[in-house]
Picture (cartoon, helix red, strand yellow):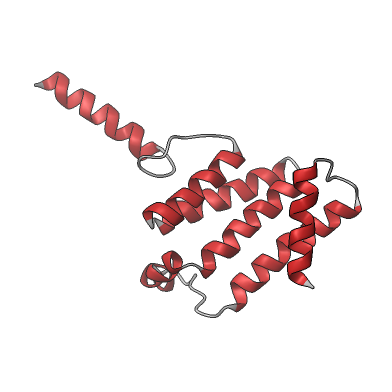
Length: 142
């Protein structure tokens, strides 16, 4: 009986030590974004999705990855516009972080476009996929 309790405690500690229960830990910011999108779109879990998005943004900034930073900013803009974010309004209001207007997501979506424009100007977009993403985003803004 004691062994079962010990195993249960170890498993619980591992799960709670992750960014979100059921989401394995990763130091890769791209995987963090993928997990954040999954939590937002498939499970409706706003708090861990936001946490992973903010962690990814911080990680991309640390390594000066402008394209990744733009991806993370885009996720956060999408997140703050989403119904998942709105459904947790009580939590965000309690912590003074709720923005019921469209202004916050609008600014967050404009920031990645600015980053992508700067990246394109410096010639950092080398792959055809990156170039096509850039062109599509620029077309949306004009």
